Length: 548
Ligand code: FBP
Image (tube, rainbow, N blue to C red; front, side, top):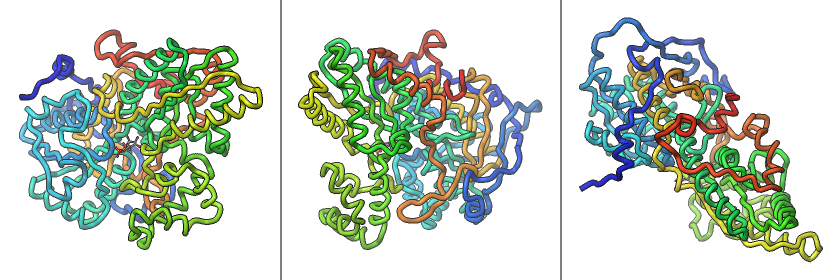
């Protein structure tokens, strides 16, 4: 018997808000032809059938249209979990049923691999109702199989045909949406008659650009981490004896760390993009933290909080260079054949003298993580590197030297935390519940309009949901060529924290005060019912970016 909590029961009854334009009949208004953000000639050549398509915006249509002919849709959840995934699916479900109640939605199981291996389930109304407004991806599961080979696409079309599926929606991050575009192009080139639509997911917040204001899940994940950070700040301000080193998920980009800093005002927050810009070394970073610890100690405050973005290590220029050479070294067939226990010796034998020196200067656990497994998209698995412990160890050493030199006279005791998996499956905030449902419902309208190779996009998101703008953006528009696993590949450009952007500037102007004073903010838990200024606020990042 399935039991659910009272909160889940009450939350199941929540009806997510939709933009006005999606509430009745819609018409697609098309803009001008588009171009990719970089390498236009190359991207055009690689995507001859899906390049240059116009941006689409939906508007209310006056005339009611006849019931649409029946069609089926498939959906895939790809990559790391993000709050609101179930609502994207319920948006697609309600969207296609509103076009024709006989339409069916099939979910492919455990990520893109389900399409290739023909593992699927029909999402019935009863199943759908059990997952509305809940966190997690457990309705169909997720996975990181990379869809990039022709035989995978061909295996996919077999099952899509068998199930009468007219369109596939891939819910994923930058890499998964890149693959969605490759699949859309392949099916279009072959005239297979199956459309592919992407949806922008990732707690990391790095899938955003002029067209996409935010990836879903970022809002809830940051609010969840900020609640925990606020609790730790209050504990540390009560006991006054610990420095808390908190690593935050987010892969390469520091959007999550920055947003959490804006919500909680910690004593230190490192921003990887700034470290790279200023060409800081590990020692520079350690010296900065130690100087804040010493300044607070001089006022009798032997406590504090330090936020560390997960990808920090990759942005230290010397380490970035090392990772680039490691990526190329590990991408060869010869390297792939090396036994795991011999891999470190193999890379050491192949590194340049400069990179070998950096490699050998790192603690053994960090060095081996950089040299070992990549995820299926070729990324270093930064969530496995314990930067919070590495930094606190090095700060303790630096403070000991400062004590000897008479420049520090405090006590330093550290606690370590890693907040990542805690936030990825949280029940979606009202913003994510509404945003995700709208993204899914909107995807059903892109399918009905016959679009393929588009990403579902909802804009104007700091306004009330009624005023949100719904439409689609050709995925090729967001692409450029980047080096992956030793080769240049078409990929969606990842959005890193912009140092001339409003969120970073707001933080940079206040961080000195936050370092020296104790100005903690305690955001508390996500609220679902109550005044709109408590329940329906977007992230501070989005508010600052849209200057509201
Ligand atoms: P996506 O990019 O797939 O959304 O994943 C986000 C993320 O949570 C990163 O922040 C983190 O580095 C990574 O997934 C962890 O991956 P895994 O779940 O495979 O451990």
